[in-house]
Length: 399
Image 1 (cartoon, rainbow, N blue to C red):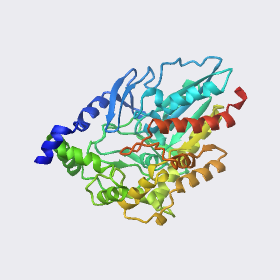
Image 2 (image 1 turned 180 degrees about the vertical axis):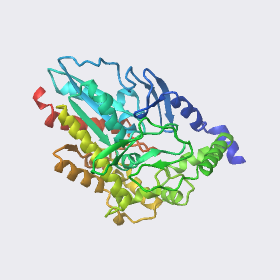
Image 3 (image 1 turned 135 degrees about the vertical axis):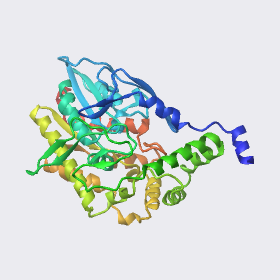
Image 4 (image 1 turned 120 degrees about the vertical axis):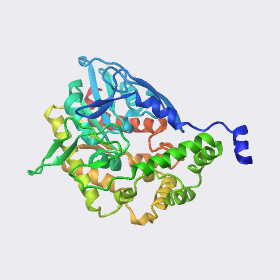
């Protein structure tokens, strides 16, 4: 009681999650082909403990400035596809990789106006990004399509039709009898909010105990609202020494945002589940590449570096959370697989993890501490890496 009283007198109120989620929900709308999309000309405030950003969308429902659908003669367009990493809700608009990449390229190149279009949408898998490109993205007349790939996250999204608690569902791709990917689930149906359904790519999984999860979340919300000391301690435990954070996550005292099977993503050899995820995902990327070639558009693939791949602190938390030794896992395995795949398909590929690790040695931080996304420093570095590759490999002739 004394501690609670002290927190109420001397500490600032902690972050209120419930208010933030209510603002964001107004930004989304059902989409029969993609599952969900952002409202055209929408706006909301996106807040989490480490950041608060003002989000606005243009007439195309993209987090970008308004622009004409028809491309000007002196204009060179780059279309960024991806999920929340590309959308960049965690930073202000001028701090996103899209905005910084556009400024950087326009400084480096002359004779053309470089227009970078941010088509990143929170929660999208590679399958939805392919559908967006087929249905709407190519109509924007891009000269380069740049796909941001978030390995573990996208691999899971590409085999998931619906997630428990999510308002919207999505279509999916499966392999047909001829071994080609085929689209299923159009128009996108409605599912019970409590159900989690997987596509035919994966075996049917047990449904999560959504009611129990809901009760736990309700209890956390209740305690954080009634007891300032609860929110105060919970917030600071997440930034405690990594060994202690990992120990707390392992025992369920702190919420582990990564699913238990995440640890198998880095194991070698991969189990059947992760092998199936990779197989369908690489087939989707291959079709996206082929579509760009058919439309005489360059295609560039880059992979998002996970925190446990970059920082020693996060690697300790990861291994302690899952009770594994560092030498049991290969944290470079996703990049190795993508590098081999890109080489076999004669595809441009930008490997970003090495650049992030090199810069992180000086103590720089490119991800948030309690969130898995890039901070503004991370968006700036990603724009720098992409600009270097694009200038050298793709539009060097514009100088």
